[in-house]
Length: 182
Image (tube, rainbow, N blue to C red; front, side):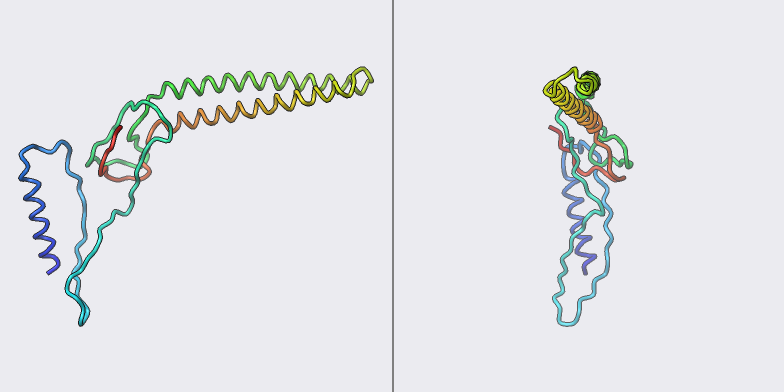
C-alpha cells in the first residue's frame, strides 16, 4: 500500500512538472530514494510517516568579503571533493598580502635595529658609560619593536587566510541542490 501511495504521488509530481510550458533553466537534481515494505504491528495504525535526508549536506559561503568572480556549478551539477565551486576576485586579497609582508619586513628590520641598540646600551652600562635609565629606554624600545613585528606577522597570516578563503572548495563529493548568489 505504501509503495502504491508513493508511486501515485510521484506520478502526480511528474505530471505537474511536465505541465509547465517553459523548459527548465537548469538540469533537474537527481535524488535516490530507497523504498521499504512496512508491515504494521498488530493493533497499529496503517499510515506511516517518514523523512528522507541526504547523508551529507553543507551550506557553503565565503568567509571574506569581496566581488564574486565566478561560480563553477549549477543546480544538478555533480562535483568532486576539493573541486573549486566559486571564487572571489583574488587581486585585492593578494595586494593586502603583499602589503602585510612588506610591513612585516619593515617591522622585523626595526626590531633587529632595536636589538642591536639594546646590546650596545647593555655593554655601555656594564662599562659604566651609560645610565640605568638609558638601558631601561633601550629595553622598552626593543620590546615595543618586538611587539610590532609580532603584530605584523599576524597581519601576514590574516592576509594569507583571506587569499586562501577567496575560493570555495567542495568539502565532499556530491550534487548541487540550490545555488544562491548575491
